[in-house]
Length: 196
Image 1 (cartoon, rainbow, N blue to C red):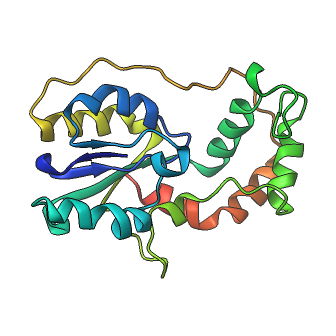
Image 2 (cartoon, rainbow, N blue to C red):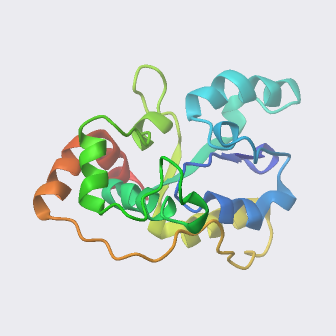
């Protein structure tokens, strides 16, 4: 999470959407940076509203003075990114290691409720399911989002930084499994399709 309320926005770090790269590009301009633990770095919009917004308001930045911004990823691609990420050498021997697991098997674990990766729809919404993040970009439009942030900050666009990247791994997913995952992540898919 990067608070740049002085420039009219706060960036919320959705998992597996390039948020670490965004932080590296803009943390020097932020009033508040949360990197660790992951649950704080990747706080949902509702958590931000409950915990951080009152602090910003106490320091002269009422909630209506800035936008919440985040990136979201196409849900099947997002799940595949988790699958690739957990195949990294450092995960070997851990229960979540996926280096020896086909994506189809990983998807079945998600569909069976054995594996919960989270939800972008949940990330951007309040407890009633209303989207409260005002500006949502698609993961593949990361450069557009970065350019918008740089413009709001009045700085040159920092050079891109590849960070926390998952290892390359070919994705082999059957049309049936893809369709089932899209149904499972229907709310997330709706958020993704409505994003910039």
